[in-house]
Length: 217
Ligand code: BG6
Ligand code: MG
Image (cartoon, rainbow, N blue to C red; front, side, top):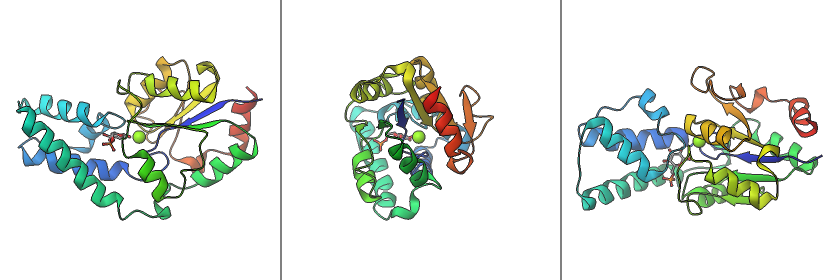
């Protein structure tokens, strides 16, 4: 029995979702646009460029291309200043247990992230060798909720989309997984991730028995 297990990165494997939030909030407020945690839910999983386009839409602000590029670069520098201080402690609870269990069960595993910083973060927290395939923001042209990132991951794992299971903390990511015909597992708040097939607060709630049921289903 084999399934393709596909993991989002930010907010699923590592606790970086809060750093994206801090950096976007600082950027939005610097150009007079208010930014709440609720707004942030709509940027989770969304590419860097698409995120800034959305913020500008919300604030009804138009920018020159040069200013757009300048803000995008500043946001990434801010974000990286947090990332550079990261250690293995920022791997989210029970992620190592879930990855080892799936490895023991010889299940194909992939990363499916919108981030262009994915490989450097995985290297920092020493998880770069845990995946059979890594698809990130450098490999895709269509941002989540487009399913491209997960379809490419399935393809690299040589698994049919319907035999894949996606772990996601973002609305856009759950939509992408559903559109791809994959099983969607939300990590976070049930009221936010209501379109997911299953939702867990975090991996401590996901038992090896549950994973085993997914494998043999
Ligand atoms: C996603 C994050 O994983 O990656 C988004 O949830 C982020 O917040 C996106 O905008 C792109 O990441 P990066 O690191 O390339 O700016
Ligand atoms: Mg995420």
